Length: 298
Ligand SMILES: *[C@@H]1O[C@H](CO)[C@@H](O)[C@H](O)[C@H]1NC(C)=O
Ligand SMILES: *[C@@H]1O[C@H](CO)[C@@H](O)[C@H](O)[C@H]1NC(C)=O
Image 1 (cartoon, rainbow, N blue to C red):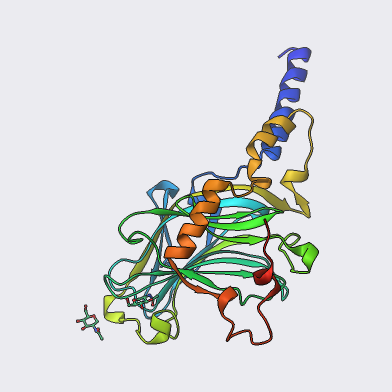
Image 2: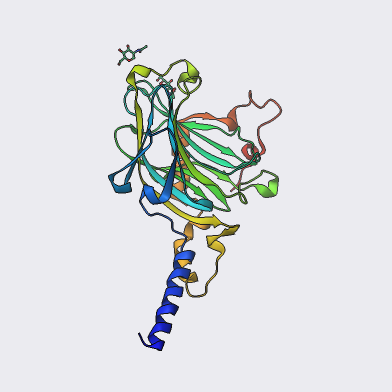
């Protein structure tokens, strides 16, 4: 290789590495590369060359995994097929969570049920260690028959929980009004399958039937369009004049708001499928509803 070719080669290597650093897309579509199995003693399995992951629960143990990366903002998609048949007492959880006692957390929890009875999608938002923001929904399909996409969008403006692209819940950044918002603690994706028959199904009335074990939930197509946090730096803050326009195109989720279709979907789901909303539970909050429930914006 001539000197000038060598220089070109090195320059292009540098460009490629700064580009890949800057484009905030972390979706290898391969569970071997994206997650670590963290517990369950062999009950969690990565299959099909990394394309599929199964979590399993029996009377001895559940199982779980977590993302290899920490993130600060992102749009996270996962296709999940939930435990079929009699899944009463069994919970599949899929959530983002930071560390420490003042943690932030964004939860999807799927509460199983007897065969033919509806699952409940339980959601919660923790900021600085405080949750108590439950909203629950039925689904408009059988979540055990096929894979469906469950997404969490987390950007500086809001958090949006979506199912098959339909927003079901929005938590706005109301920090100026004094409601803490998750914005400075990096979070990781976690997922687990566990026994929660003390509360999950009909408030704990229906117990897990262990003779139907093992219970299995299946995952595929994990996608993270996100800012990776590493050594105190967000990948979205790394600036490079050569790649900013490309990276910018890919980062529309960072400023994305609910459009009119999203607003409509939110209203439709909340009207037809909402089971519980902390924001209307005046018995629970005799001193007054949480601030974010009383503010009307737009
Ligand atoms: C289970 O089915 C019962 C009866 O249809 C229903 O009341 C309940 O909300 C369903 N879901 C859960 C998780 O309990
Ligand atoms: C538990 O499941 C077994 C096997 O399907 C069934 O025979 C049994 O009646 C179930 N037990 C209860 C309490 O429903």
